[in-house]
Length: 287
Length: 273
Image (tube, rainbow over all chains, first blue to last red; front, side, top):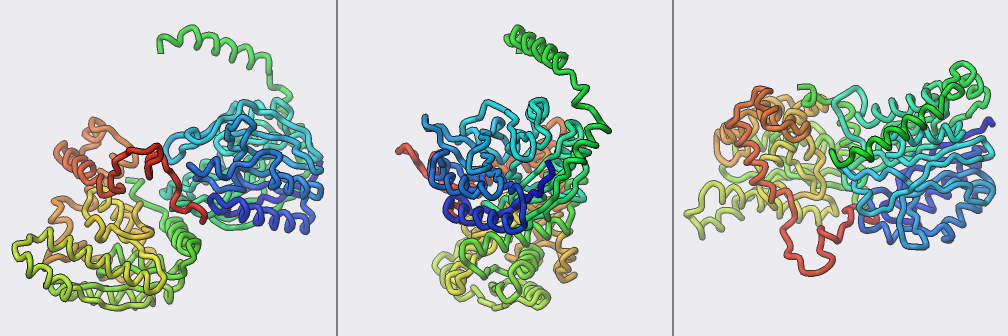
């Protein structure tokens, strides 16, 4: 279904749940005023990114008052937002929820926790175990949290599960100043465009801005059409709201023009993956 | 080498945003920095002025009696060029009485003492103006350990600590740092005629090439040899990086508890900001 979306390219404060919740609620009200149907926030929007030992301090249970407040707002607008989730058995996840009609429509726990270079997520967080598409008022969607999107299998699974819109919540640090544009921005733009094009999906990419300990988050949130063309993109390092109208007709036309998903052979893929999996298990001692 | 050529406009955008964000989020509006007359501090002054407005930047020139008078003249030129506040605090009255007690002290001890004297002046002015001290050490110096621990290496924020000297030159051109400052030979200005490159024994261009490939691209020693670097040069630089690593770390703490600062008590500095 056609809808108006807003990508909230915000600057959260590190470890300050109350301040960030207030910021998020303000942006939600603004989006409601602009008659948007869906607002997307970045990864860990309620907490900031380089949390380290703050993780247990800022973690929220799904029944926490903060999440209840956001659920209430989702009666007026659908919301996708990232936060640290605490489970009943005291695991901490880098999670995203999709809220609509006052309910949690879907929960995604980040599966791929980067632990290399400047990243250290696996030290502090537990990994998710699923990629599942889910139905919303605006069609079937899937959520990815930042690094998840760099694993082709993740977006592939969501598309095979019927998602026509992929939401990617991100806290991507900017680096690489040799080229025409920021290295990480260039890499993400290629990735998001290719993902959209290969899977005939829309991609809503929302990346935060601001600095944490000298590391910049570069923004550049964008809506990429199913053709792979970027329709609108937020400015570099700019605290802003990016709006776009998603046209259902465009999705339909793209899937007629380029029926890649119709022709995708799930059985072949599964057979081959199963074979590879078996072969790797039987030869693993040689590694 | 492509990696040593940077997109100066992008760099300028990021570094000015960095100063703006990191200064204001701790509740400060102003910064203070030492202006030596050299290119590194000149560039930081230009970045700070662009980020915060020239009126919010306090530059202090802190000459010793043996400092080249040209250095102070260049510092004035820089301050006038970007319109920032400028003052001169000579350190001779603090340094000389001290070394009257230790007349045998060599150049290194004297140089380190001067660097640390300047640090105390900057941090005092930091309290006076409620301003943060900006660091002016570049990545080349930081990796080689060519700086004084708790002296010129001390700061609250360093906008150019991830820029090699080659990058500093490029960005300084783009930001229109005065030509005299860009063109002159880099010097710690501890004695007349001293230049960094003579003291180090190689040029910044040479060492930046090696550092970029060794540190940023992580080429192995055999790969660096194939790339044409002399084995003795590689070993010297590797040794300098290794032996100066202590300068880039906090003091070592003896661990006895379950949560030791920076070991298993880990928080970002921007915690709550």
